[in-house]
Length: 183
Length: 103
Image: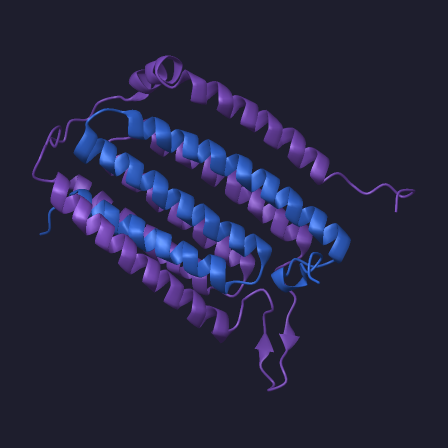
């Protein structure tokens, strides 16, 4: 019962946050709605019994990525520039127009139909085969994930460390301040 | 009362993915496009964990989801660095001003 309530609340958070990211006019509001959506996804991980992934989602996304996005929005000043269009409406240039929304909606609808058909076929094929570990057993996954990370997936683990180092150095080099004598 | 199964998680992932595509195409701010990319990556990670519980039965999906989170964090750092560099050069964060390779 508690799992059902948590699932419904998390699903509402996730979907409403994602939709509000698409339609909110302010970029800062959009990233706050993205934060709500990511918290909802963390709740969905909890209902799936993935405690370590849920906590990592909270720490990395909510504590790291969204804060980084907020800093970038504030550094680029993308929140508060408005222009008045020729018909007299105040318009946010970061928002996109009706044309882009129609095209984006049609594209996402098309991809949703294709993906939904794939999902339908996959569910039809898999649900009858094996209904293993469907019971609501709460077990810790941290030790198993740790063992998997250093035995079966150790190559991906090391490669991801190199990727993180490269991303760190690359981000620091790309965003370094411009020297006065340079250009 | 409906039954929570694999299908409900896949539908939520599908809605997240479609909304991310909509955000990526419709919005004109570069940082908002990065927000759409985050939504799509979350949909993929959610699908991995859902299949890991309901269909496969081991924890490989969790590990894949963790790697997706790692790649998303690295991608966000580099992408935002590029946006800040672009803002230093062009004084704007609008996608229609990124016309350096046009013509």
